[in-house]
Length: 453
Image (cartoon, rainbow, N blue to C red; front, side):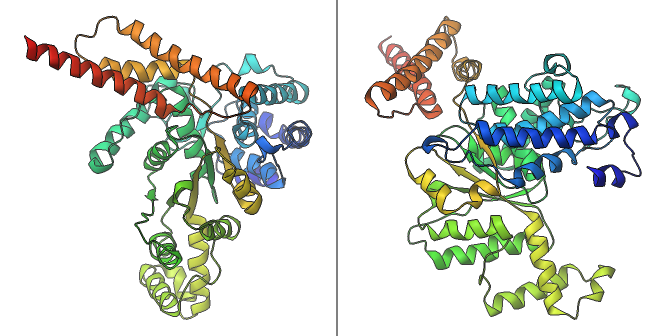
């Protein structure tokens, strides 16, 4: 915190904010200690382990902002609360645990800062991001807003518009990967969370959710919004460890290490055809590199590529003749430019086993646990797909039926688990299949009737 305020020489923070630094540090440490006591790991919550890296991530998130976004002490307190939510709350697996943690932060806010959560957090859920410009010079909305400032997202309609425009641009630029996404509130919230992680130095994310929850699509959109490159390795039949290592060199490290281009490497658990892949990913998360990855010819290519990319850089001339320093520069740039996003499913024992075997998946990643879609999300999705049908009578009633079926089946799966000790998963994919099946049957019946007439 001291470093953050001292480094802000061009845009210094106000005295009312600087005097909060000791309270922020003490409150964060208390939250960290309370989280360790209250949220203990269990077989179903194997990732409920916390360490000092989580503590540092809170302050790293706070340092993403600047004085322009912090107009008063309440804004700074909300920023602190937001970073606590992102680091600790996002990994919690149910609404009860999340509500308990929110109450914990609200209690610390009242104790340390004498502020009531409900009075200062007026726009819920509490979200901060830098991709929607909402800070204006002198608070004059007639002027052009400042760009790329990490601030509270108070105008949610503008945030949704930015996300929808970005989705339209993505679909125009990448027609082969066109995404038909419904950007309901929960989806936009996950975009904000993923964007926050990948735009943080050494930021890596572990997205945990069932199939169809949107982990990959939302990562692609968040990466596009951040103006980063995304890489998803294709694994054809016969793909092996040799091919994996070649892809690591050419598609990942050379792509981001030579010119320090920000790259998001999206990897899902369905691609784990060899557990040794996870050993390499564990090393990337922990050290930023894979031991013994480069062959002699790879090293020569790296040195030549870095020299070519920096031939017009005057600062590079001092190390251009020292190949060891050139390799060090490449390794540093690759480490700082590469952001891992892992998409995993909590279904089965593989997830828990992998967390035990590869601790960096928890220790070095910001975890975002995808909860089941809420009612308003189910309604939005049904309205979009059913709204495309011409002359559909009583659309509102059909939407209600779709939502009710999904909700009741989800409740039955909980009862099934409690009574029979067996799991049955109802995923967002199931809901989409339900709606698309209805649309398909309706089209077939209408076609049949038209032919009869």
